[in-house]
Each structure stands twice: as C-alpha cells, then as structure tokens.
Length: 371
Image (cartoon, rainbow, N blue to C red; front, side, top):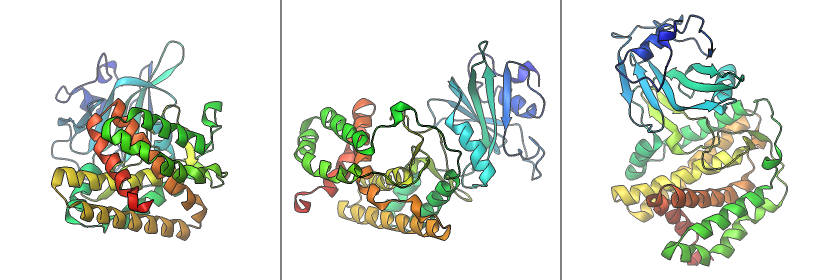
C-alpha cells in the first residue's frame, strides 16, 4: 500500500477518492507507522470473497448521521468510519470485532478491517473502521417509534432473541481482570447515580423526584445482596438506537461502551444490558407521545407489552442454549431505576430536552397509587 492511500491530516471526505483508494489498497502491506487488522474477508471487488460487483464499486458518498466521526460509503457495499480523534488502543470495538467474528455472531454490520497508527513511543491509536454497509437501515429511534405509534409489539421477540444471542457470544469472551476502580458494589454504583440525579434535576421534576426518593431507594435495595450471576463482557450501551432495522433484518452496532459512565467495567451481569434495552423501549413510548401524539395510556400499554415480549424471548433463547443462569431477574428492576437516573444525569449535562423521557417513565412507574 502506498502512503497516498492513507490519511494525512484530517479525515478523508466523500468524493475525494481517498477512501476508495484506501479500500483498493487494503490487500497490500501497509507502510509504517500504519497497521491494519483484518476480520472477515471483504466482498469483491474489495477483497477475495465472492459476490456480485456493484455497478459503480468505487463511488463515494457521505453519511451525516454521526456528527463525531465521518463515515464514507463506497459502492453501496462498504462503510469506512474515519475517527475525528484517533482513539488509543486497546479499544473495545476491536476486541468485539475479533470475538464476534470468531463466534459467528451474524447480527451486526460485517466487520472487515481496522486501520491503526503506531506512535514514536509504541502507543497505537485507531484511525478507521471498515464494515459492511446495511441497505435501507434506520435506527431504533426511528423504526421503533413507528412501531409504538402503530401499537405493534411483534418485533420484541426478535429483539429478545438477538439480545440473547449477543450475550451467549459475549459470555465466551476471555475474562479480564477488574481494576480497583471497577470493584465498587452494584448498590454503591446505583445509589451514587440516584444521588447525582437528585442533585441535577431541578424545578417541578426535581421536586417530584425528591418526593419519590424513598421509593426509588427501596427499588435499589435488592442490589445489597451479593451478585452471583456470571459477569460477562457486555455491550455496555445497549439501547434501541444501537439496533438497526435494515433490508434483511436487524443488526447491533457501536461496541464502544457507555460514554456517559466513567471507567465502566466491561464485565458485568447481562441484566445490565437487558435493563438498558427494556428502559429504552419505555423511552420510545415517551417519544411517541411527545412527537407523534400517541395516547399516553396506549403508549404505556405498548411499552409494557414490548418489554414482556422481549424478556420472554430472551429467557427462552438462554434456556434453549443451556445458559439460563446468565440472567438474574432480581437485578432487572434496580438496574432499570439506575438507568433512568443515568438518563437524567445525561440530560442535565448534555441534552436538557431529553429529560421528558426518563421523567415520563419514572412518573408512570412511581405514581401515588403504587405507593
């Protein structure tokens, strides 16, 4: 590979031809200080795998959804995500790519390659990720809101099986040692999130939240008991926005972990992912109420039905695989409360307009008649 096919300063943009040149040269050795990690073989004409060749295989176009990085689609078959800021290794996405490829997990964009650069001191940084392009894809904040508006819950069984298959794959991930910062108890972590949410949520919402503090703390109480369920490598940021619906099914994306939780342990109970996914269904219901005019009671009933369908399918898939031990149902309720607290923290620090969603969920769950 010649240096002209590699990035200089700044991420290559669609239409410059640099991304297509990079793909065309991937089969060749890369010059120092760059390095390439290969995963699945890329399809023709970009690699040795057989398949139909696009009409214009080197045509480039941009994707404007991700404002942090810059993604270029080449030939409507490949996506190259150029990182705006090089990320230091080890990087969770690269570890996930390697393991999911090894275990045959198919419900994600096919991982093809990663471009890195080695610094003068030997430190390595990630520059770009190369994956398959998923035609007609939309994320859960689009397709799932459509389902909520229409009152359809049939998709939930598919999501439950997908989540279980993901965890069955990640459960075989090589175990890593926990650093001291990762050894705080589940209850301490959840209680700290509640304290922070109480401190950051102001106005009428804050007053309401403080009035429900005893009930919220009681909801976290099961975390005082020792957690005995297996700790596995989890997704870490597993909400419906990370699940694409595309022309041929569903795909999980973004294995970078939760950007809002500092030094989060990548090895946690599977219930952590499941709780984030189920609460995101309730957030979808709140979005449908606010943006689509869906009746609140109908939206709440939809969320309850979708949650039940997802959990039933998830448990069944684990049981079929002989791993029902991966899910400790006792953790779901407390983790869901903690997740709503983290949504309030995220809203206060980054996206104030989002507060309506976690507050809507908490108000639905913790009404006067429930206490």
